[in-house]
Length: 151
Image (cartoon, rainbow, N blue to C red; front, side):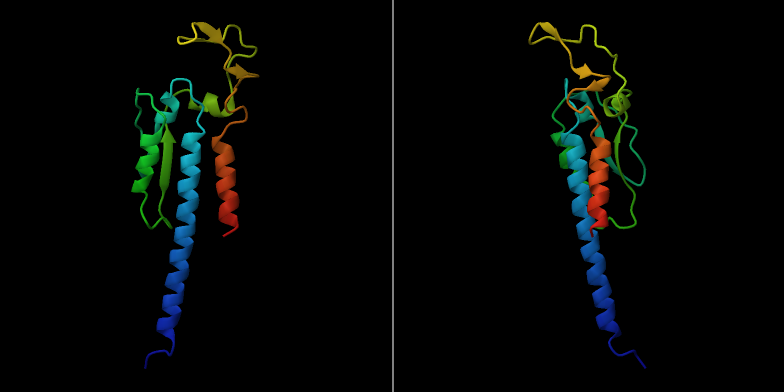
């Protein structure tokens, strides 16, 4: 004999699962897009080297420079179901850690030569990029974590 109301309970569980999944998906997409958009830009290579993948981190590197919009468009490939899936946003450039955690020479001697200005310009201070002096990835992850806890 079937349990009375079991189908209603199953539908309620499925609805809650789908809502949690949708809420988490929104947090992931917003957080990953913010990481890409907030990447410090000199030539744009660091911003353009974010790669989205599912199941395993990407090992890709590109030498092209852009505003990172191609990678943000790639986020459309995020599956509709994200619960219990491993999603990766990877940047394999050797200096991405310096951008996030600091490590530039301090004090700056000459700075970086800016061709368009035909002069040197200091782009770091205290060992950190002036565009992201306290990093930006960790801040985005903390925001994502806080948003997830509010669910």
